[in-house]
Image (cartoon, rainbow, N blue to C red; front, top):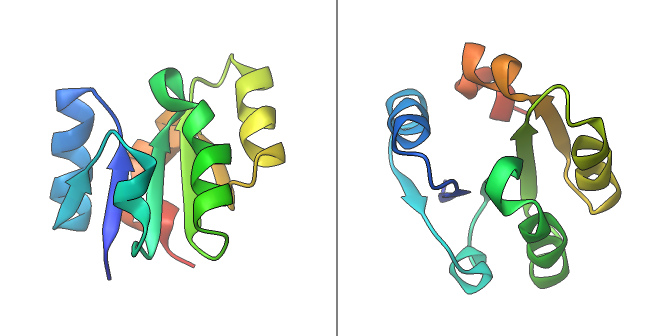
Length: 100
C-alpha cells in the first residue's frame, strides 16, 4: 500500500511514520497519482483535499485538524475527504484512524 502525507510538521511526520511505516511526505498533488491513501494535515494543507480528490477520485483521503477549527474540518468533508478527525483523535492511534 502506498501512503502519502501532506504535513510539514517534523513531529507529526515522526508519529505518522512510526505508526504506519513507509510514508512518502509530499508537497505536490502530482505525487499522489498512484497512492492508495493520502493523509492531509489541514492546518497547513487544507486546499490539498479538493486538489487530491480532483486528481485521484478513488484514493482514500484521511484528514486531521484542530478540533476548534470546525469550518476547516467541515470544508474537508465537503471537499471529499473520506475521514476527517480532530488532530488529537488522529494521533491517539494513526493506524486505526486510517484503517477502513
